[in-house]
View 1 (cartoon, rainbow, N blue to C red):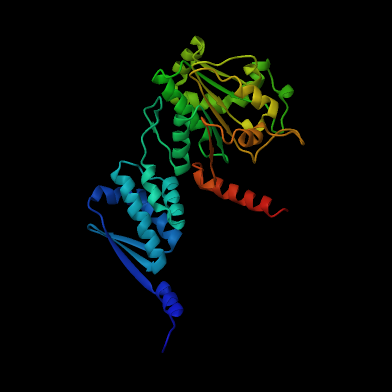
View 2: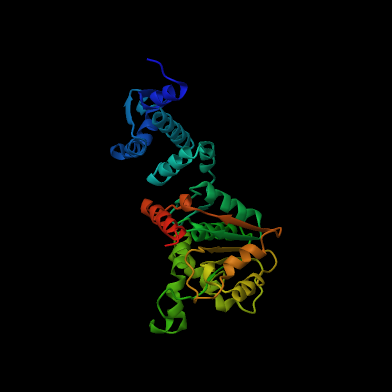
Length: 334
């Protein structure tokens, strides 16, 4: 029977094949497989292959293309293990997505340097290429704009960079702020004075600082005036020198508020502006200051913009799926 080249290629794809990889150390195999082989099961499910290990050899069985991709994921993960990185569902799925895109050479960049140590001694590192680019941009620019969906680490990494700069005495103050814009609720119905009313809006910023510094150290720096967490309205009329200033939820600023905030910048200071332009809670018809500043400040030296996508999400896997589903629904025009 005769086959043309296309048919031969399709037959090769459909025919089961196997590939054998060598693992030089048993502890690497243990780290690769994970508890109850959960890491390998994830790869098997993604590519429809079967992975077995005997002695120092790892065998992958399945269709040719799937086997090739699974092998590339495993080789990438072994390189991460050799560089001291712990495997998790998040970074395994991220490696899979890079291999599916033909971008596995970027995986090497994931084993980056630690940018901060939490109060409990946990190292904080960028977990995606987008996060690494974001941290580099903060280090290299005076003003950095980070835009992307929930769970991409925009605020958390910015706070980590701020704490690192503070600990190394590059700056004297950390100032965290966000607009107190309601997302369906009304401030007036919340109990207490004005500070009590705005505290729930600032809670994510408190949480990040507590994680980095510990509650007691945080309180000590607040009392000394080294750390300030306040609503955006409190920034008006000030000049912020020797400070690391983070504006969170910037999609909920008006153009006037954004201009006011940007012009607070003083000498030896850095600003990081974070937001998600798909979650604007401003009244209908009001323009987002974040959208405007991304266009207006586009080509100014010393100002960088980092755009995250759903692949940079480091929360539960379903968060990526939810973001993707909403984007598909909104793009369909329904």
